[in-house]
Image 1: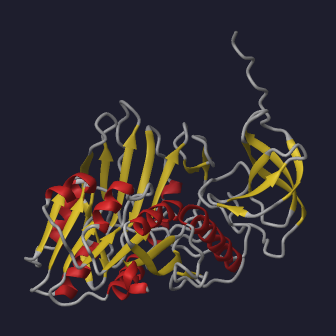
Image 2 (image 1 turned 90 degrees about the horizontal axis):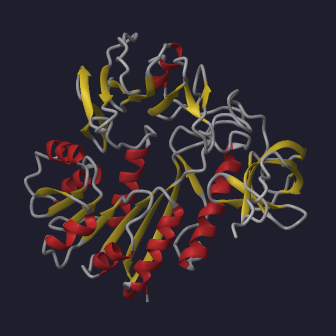
Image 3 (image 1 turned 30 degrees about the vertical axis):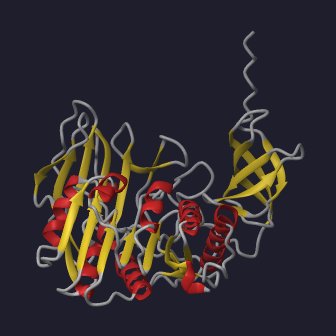
Length: 442
C-alpha cells in the first residue's frame, strides 16, 4: 500500500529564536515542535518570523527565510543591495550583517567544521580563529566592496540579465550587481537585451585591460551582435557539446599574479577576487618555504599559478610536476610556464595520473582541489611521498576538514591554518592549511 504524500510546509511561518550559524549562509533554529529550520537572512540571537521555503511534515529539516525581524542583533544592518533579501537574489548571504560580523560568522563555521569533521580545535590547527579580509576590502558597514571579476548572469524570458534566486532557477532581474568589479560593471551587461540567451558571463581580467563575454544561447537561438563601450572578446558555449568557441577577439584573457602574466582561455578557472591569486600564492609560499633544488607537485594546477611560483623559487636545480584534468587549462599552463624547462604539466584526474608518474618521494606539495576535496585515496597517496610540507588550498571548509582527518591518519599534522574572506557578502571563504609530518611536531 502506497504511503500518502507528506504535507508541504512551504509558506508556513514560525516565530523562532535564531541559534548558531551553519555552513552554507544560514543559521539554525527550531520550531515549537522541535523541527530544525535552516534560516537565511537571520543572525544568531535574533527573534524572527521564519517563512518555510522548502520542506514537508516529518522531514529532517526545513529551509526558511527570516521575513520579519522581531528582535534584531547588534550586528544587523539594512542590506545595501536593493536586490538582496528573502526570495530575491541568491548571490549574497550576509548583506544584512556588518563586515566584521560576517568574518566572525565565517570563522565560527570553519571552527565548527574542523571540530566536527577533523576533531581539531583552532589551536591544534595553528589558527588564531580570525578570518582576514582581502587587501582593500576593509570597508565600513553599509558599503560593499566591488570585487567579483567574473559574473555569470542568467537571462529572463524577455531578455533581461539577472541573477538566480537562492536554490532556484528563477531569475531576479537586476540593473547593477554591487559586488561586481568595476571592469565587469563597465560592460553594461544589465542594460542590454539578451533575448535567446540562457546565460551571459562577463570577465574583467586582473592586471590587464582584457574583457570577455561568454554567451550560452538557448537551442536554435541566434547570437546577438555584441557591441559594448570598450574592446571585448566574445565566446559562445555550444548548447549540445558544452564546448566553448570564439566569436571574435582573443579566446583568452591575461591575468596578472606573482609578478607573472597568465593566459586563461575559454572562461577557465581563475580566482574571482582581484587580490585572491596574490594573497594565496603568498600564503602558500610562506608556508612551504621552498628551497633551491626541491622537487614539488602542484595538483589540480589549473593554468599554473602555483606551479609557476614554485618553479621560480626552486630554481633550475629543482623540478615541478603539475596535474590538471581540463584540456584547455593544461594548454594554458604549458604556455604560461614555457620558460621553465624543469616544469612538466600532465593532463588527467589526479587520482589516475599521480600513481602513473612513478614518483615515490617529493619535497613539497600544493593541492587546490575542487569543492568536493581531494578524497581519501589521493590523500593516502600523498601521505606516502614523504613531503617536507604540504599546502592545501581549500574553498570549502567541510571538504578541507575531511581531508585533514585523512592526512592525520597518514602521519601528517596541521602546522598552520590561515582563513581569508575573499568573497565578501557571501558565506564562502578560502583556507590555506600547511601540513608537515607529525613526528616534527613532537
